[in-house]
Image (tube, rainbow, N blue to C red; front, side, top):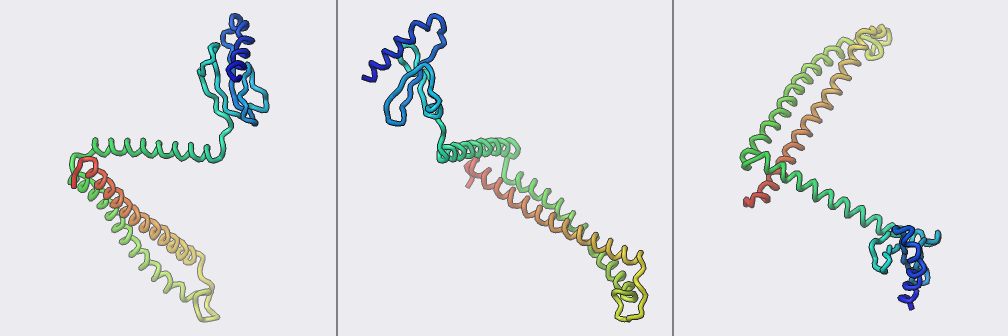
Length: 206
């Protein structure tokens, strides 16, 4: 019966093929599970999956219907998986092209780590000098209000107050930088450890 419907549908459309060879026949299954054919798609079936047939009733294309949330989530997950695979492939390619041995990776790692160690050392020395300066400023500020216990002490001069505030702010900024340098050092070590592990896998090294 369905084949007969298809033949009739194609026969009805066939005379128009000479005028419009691009004429298409669509096939879809309606809400009742019945296969339908037509040269256009009713609006209520716009979101249904459809097949495109040629003038011999052969499927030449498939049109997706509205996707469910599960389908969308699955496609997103698959896209992310493919992207992760591609990124890993590129990273592997770069790793093999950059290094010839594990020893070479270790040497590069140690140079990078030494850079952050040097930055940390300089920052620690600068912080030590700032702390000494802050201690001296606190001693000076103790003679003035609001730091003095003497109720008759004069108010702290604006210059000394500004110097205290500036020194504290500078110490805080360099303490933040010191934490960042140390964190970067650990991040570099972890990254190179991962590179070494991956390099061994790619090269078949135990």
